[in-house]
Image (cartoon, rainbow, N blue to C red):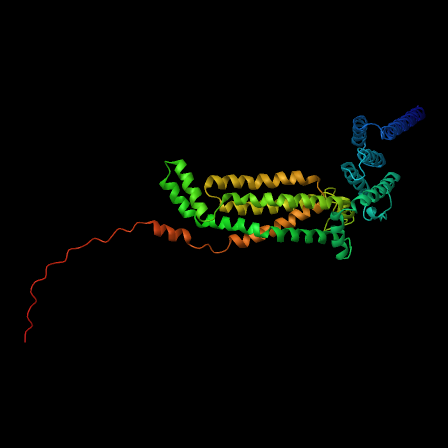
Length: 403
């Protein structure tokens, strides 16, 4: 009886194992069929009209994302990510269009799973599977094509000259090129920043006079506003100067973004401190290169922006403006961090270095001793009453001197 039960249990276990293997095999066949269908879609719609192509590619991308959710790691996920990058690469026909940069980012994400040295084609631990190796081959071909177009532009040649001037070393040449560009921008915008901080200092100097106006004209808001503007105008304390430097920096911001964009495939070779180091294997939110986004660098930029905004709020005219600027000092860094999340870390490095230089200039400007202009003018405004005239007492005859 015991042997019969043992044989029955063994038979059931063997049947269960066979069923699992058959299910896994059927699932693999289904996945292979799904992948084959998506690959056919990529080749079939590549030369179709843009709307038809994008519609088919959008559905194929959704199918690939579903496969990755079902199997988020391993060879299946790598194959899905590779096909997604190929779809992104074919979204438009421009040789250096936006889709090429989107695809390059996906390729680098997949290649980075092979660990250190993968972007150079020599991963220390070898390629985990053939799909990661194919991603490297596709990425190299894409990089050569886009660089062939971008290398003809002046922006590309400028950064390339700076990289070569610093030795073309991956550990420091690429981020040094960004720092040099940032210093050039800072030298150009320094006079305007000086005017901004000087206006803030003048606002601090006339604070006592502004407080006196608020007390004297509390019942007449229109006249109070008029007198405040006139007082700030007379002493060079223009509140609009706080926005002007930011507006002037916008053209430089767009220019630097374009420069970094055309050189992005070369920045993929660059490193900076933790960016591109062994940390990227274990920490996915650390950039694999200066061409990829990096959260630690982005958080540092947000902190530096918060500090500089808080320093600016010291020149607010009244408490309402101080509270408003205090709120802005929290909202603006958070907003910029979310916006810049998808930007290359090379661009974030430019913003961080520029903000550190500006904040240092701001610190020394605002911490200079403030002349006591307001106190002197307060004294001048006090009407000094004339001293009372005391009548002189009538003088009597002088006493004779005794001999």
